[in-house]
Length: 193
Image (cartoon, rainbow, N blue to C red; front, side, top):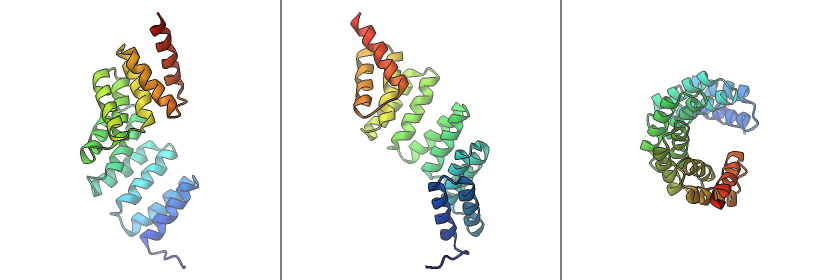
């Protein structure tokens, strides 16, 4: 089959291929072509944002996610991506606002709830963090990250038995997270006293 260079789909798919090969510069070039043909292709803008993030160009990533959410304000994955970049930049307020938008669009967006919980944990808002992480687990019982986060939150709240249960659950699920494993060790020492 001959590829149509005037087709946005052709360039979008090429962009995906390059992204899968971790050739993000070529991926961006393809998404640029796709958005030249169709400036309203929110998926191309979103994917271009991911590629820029992978190249550590966080401001360009945010600009692409902004464009995707401008085109489709209900594009939950673009809000999530933008929240992720803001988290990485330690812009916690903006990050929470983005994750909040994603969970308002899709209340069952487990990873967005978990990431909000992570931020609230880092900012020592432990009860709010626990509420978010519990939602993450409610919507995805296999969310390993949520159990790891829950272990840390409950440890901070001095709810050691519950923290241990969450930590051990994450280990059963395959966690090798150093913080979680260290937390479990600390809890076991405390519970032995």
